[in-house]
Amino acid sequence: MKLGGRLACLAFALSTLHAWAAPFDDLGVELVYDDNLTRAQLGRDIKGDLALAVSTSGGPRFQLGDHDSLSLKGTLVATKYRHYDGLDNINAGLALGYRRKFGLGPYVPQLALTGSAARLEYDSRLRDGWLYAAEAEASKRVSDRLALRAFVRSERREADDVPERVVPFIRANVFDLGSRSAGIGADFAYDPRHLVSIGYTWHRGDIVSTTQRNLPVFLASSAIAPDPVFGDDTYAYTMHARTRVFSIGLSRELSRQASFSLGYEYRDSRADGGIDYSGNLFRATYLYGF
Image 1: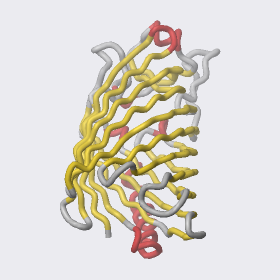
Image 2: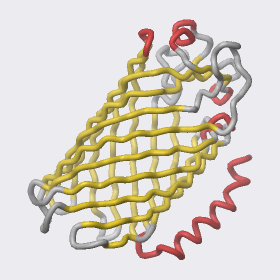
Image 3: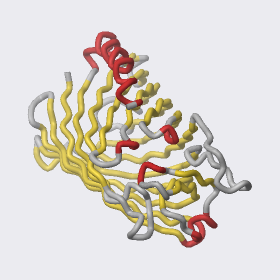
């Protein structure tokens, strides 16, 4: 498998990251179930699957003054799906962040600016490429128990290869995508060990849906390519859509270094041409900080 062949090289990068930034590293193990991986509308096309993801991240932080800091963070994530091997992936990324505290003490507002780039390597070559993102987040702790946050984010994804066109006048680079999003959220600690998080995100931009031949989806698409990950006669379509995401999570501190959390997300997308879909995502995460 292509993914397994690249694992050794990325493992070397991971070991270098640990040696370079060990005091900042963490390790995460996450089990995720997505009941609509295909982002499809019709029951015949909706596919769900369970995935296991292992991640690590780390990097130095530089204090620029009493209120400003700069950070450089590397991440490595490996994900394995139970049924759809073509979605198995290893992603490696690097993020540069700037944080500003507008005063002293725990209750002053903060602003964080982050730019990142990630390399995406899938067993499905169609999905290989790069992901670039820029984000601004404002946050404020209101009390000992409650913190609020809001963010805006812009993403650009670029695919390595362009398959042959299915239709001569429609492009085939389905994973060349752009989007913008904005969101709000809150974290509430109802006791020293438990944290409840809620969030709402509004997303506008390109999405990819994989279905069998579908005329309404075809007419609403800006790009089309064969996508054999989900079957021999399935196609990936790029569409412009508006998506709302509602999320809620519960986290428990297991020790000074470890935590366990459960999360749920509901997605509702409305694409051009009257195409819409919804989906549910469930996750269980264990995080350990070194």
